[in-house]
Length: 89
Image 1 (spheres, rainbow, N blue to C red):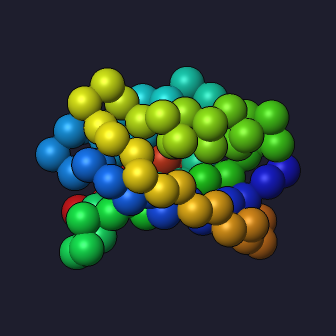
Image 2 (cartoon, helix red, strand yellow):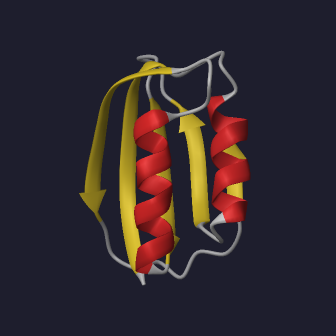
């Protein structure tokens, strides 16, 4: 199991980043959440098996088609045994 905190900066709001992240998280069986930040970045908490989390992080580095990723910071976290993946408002 692996738990990461991801902060993605660039053109990541208004480009369906959160909805796309939820779709990818479900595809990779990732648990956690995604939310917009006031500074225009997006924060993601992601937990799952190591390979799936690594694949999800790689997707975050590219983002959905309309996004432009300037920076993607990853912090290792403690396993929280999260259930489901949620878009937070």
